[in-house]
Image (cartoon, rainbow, N blue to C red):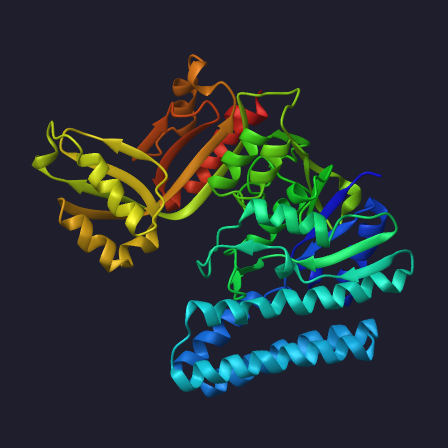
Length: 447
């Protein structure tokens, strides 16, 4: 028996019809363990709900509670779920109301409480999806609370999984078995004190990868609303091409630098245990998808182009940096203390420039600590474009082709050489789409 773990995203859980498509696909693909996200937009609405309660906005709070309630009860009605499942959903909604009431009364939503609130989405969607599978009457369906095995540290809202504990518990309590499909939740976990935690936005993909690794799965399948990964964002450029296969290294770079189909953490377990990851569409499975493997036959110079909008160039400048020992470590110690990740770095004799998310300008404590080291300046309105491929730092003439393709588009920053798999450039937001189109034509369409 091939052990397959499948993960379905929020679009695949948006209503009863989508759940039935996902259920049929689960059977057709012979998945033995299924991880699901919350129903479409529910996590966003739970965040808004917590915020409304914290601010004392009763009208918004009540409206959001009713929207979430009605969505799940409508799906339950369409699926004609059992009284047992209806009661379970009612209990979860009752728990949500109690949590929101406490936030409203205290005018504060702690990370611990927010994790409990956010867990509601996956817990309800997984109960409903299990019922969609039962309609097909082909397998024994077992609903499983992932928090029984997904052990994490104590960091709320972006908890770190404890891999050894997860592996031991998963093999004991939820092994993949012939004739049975286990349905469980992405995104959520539990620390050793028993408190609910979450793995951060996009954590459902990560959950699928962790469980696949813990159960020594033969394959992880991620089902979304698009048929695999493309050479660039089709919304940016209509001539984007589907990619049939990617290496782990290429996929990791794409995810890190903005490809929304795949979360950066998804490949952690896959790379460790060398199982393939397939990305496909719940709604168009006949179109195939993208396989991500440790090794691929075709290794083009540029496989794909990813991007991130609304980036800033953060410049830290001081004469004290000139020939100073340890100055760079002081800067990055500040980033570490504030848990800020940077992408690209360039230096001069008296300055350091790093690309970061534009919203970082609002992080007053970070800026204050950096100002102790030198003058701090944010240049906003940039996009980080990444060319993902192979052998980039040993291919002569690539720079010439790059700047010829960009033409009159100004490049504010360029990082090249740290990895053979990517080349990053920073351009103004308004030039991003044109830059991607020109680069795609030069490096992908003409090759």
